[in-house]
Image (cartoon, rainbow, N blue to C red; front, side, top):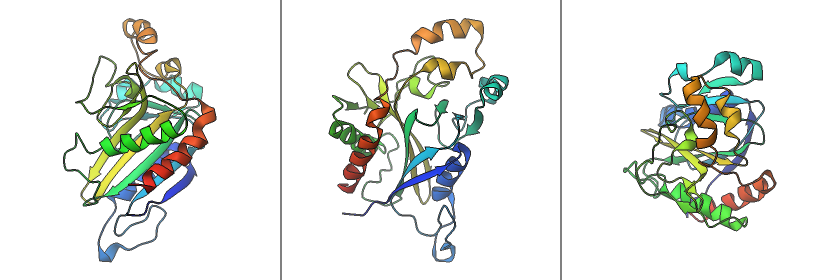
Length: 243
């Protein structure tokens, strides 16, 4: 059984994303054994529990800049950050979600070359952690991406392989991947609360889009409650240790 490192990490949302991205995109090999904050050299299993110090609207790697209402973000004190993994926008605020980044080296026994299956095991450890905290029944999505008219704009509107869903199909844990030659980064967000109105106010929606969005996004996701956060993280560490 290979060891996991589960680390608490604090900082701004931008700095946390940059740090995680550097873990898989940095140099590898004998000549790259540096000891910078993100690490370099050979990749190894890691899980980083992030504690953001600010609020940010995090866009997917290919999400158009035009989808953001910059004035609304500035007025709300919300920075706009772009992650290197795919998907739609996520509003990251202190206490709004459990953000855990999981790093897996290429060639690890858990590694899969099939991108559609690669995150299944990640969803399983989250489902185990949530069940251990008294939540359930929950399922792991093993079908192709389930899209709708909002999923390219709002991350939690769609469901992708490996993500954790409740009995009614609402998303509980979102997972986005960044794959590189030396390994994969799974960026996981487990909702503590789901308030789509807070996110929608920061997007550049037309009146025709905004009116139906409030109702249509109300039930696409669900939170587990802030009081369960530490218990879920504890059980997540135990589930990873069994992998």
